[in-house]
Length: 201
Ligand code: ZN
Image 1: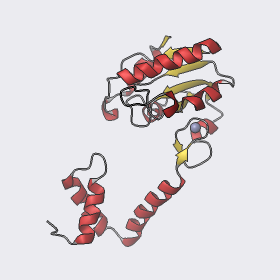
Image 2: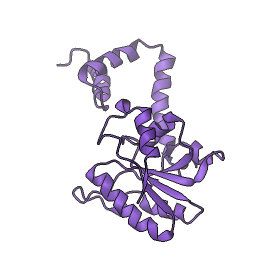
Image 3: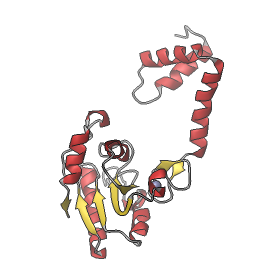
Image 4: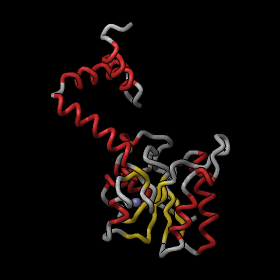
């Protein structure tokens, strides 16, 4: 099995453990790294270590960042009275996808999951408390952009029941985005149509 020697095999194994990387790709990447100039390989390793050491949740919106507040939360040009609630960074309707469109001018809140009784994930297991704290400030609208899966819908219902009594407008994004759809296949037009077509809950 160990054709290449322990260290090469270990590198291949580590790479193969990454999502979306099959055995063949892992091998290709490993040989690519081995053939890199030493400084580049060291730079790559250092980037991984630095990111791991310094990246944490933004204290406001809970997205991943390496500063106290992420660049979006710090941006004074954005409308901080409009908060779009997304499940996480992997969901179909996520922050990165909307940012790529360049057309959304509000800010975000990342829940890091969705309520799922089946998986034993309750409201306290995701970043709802942090959202409620933000809503004590000056907020006009909360746009719920959780997925159109069972969990995403349950989370949307839960949030709307919680927020509506505060008088803040709660809207749900139109279901133009496929369930569990891969980000790369969701085009800008679909995302923007879903945003424009949002309805009040
Ligand atoms: Zn932020």
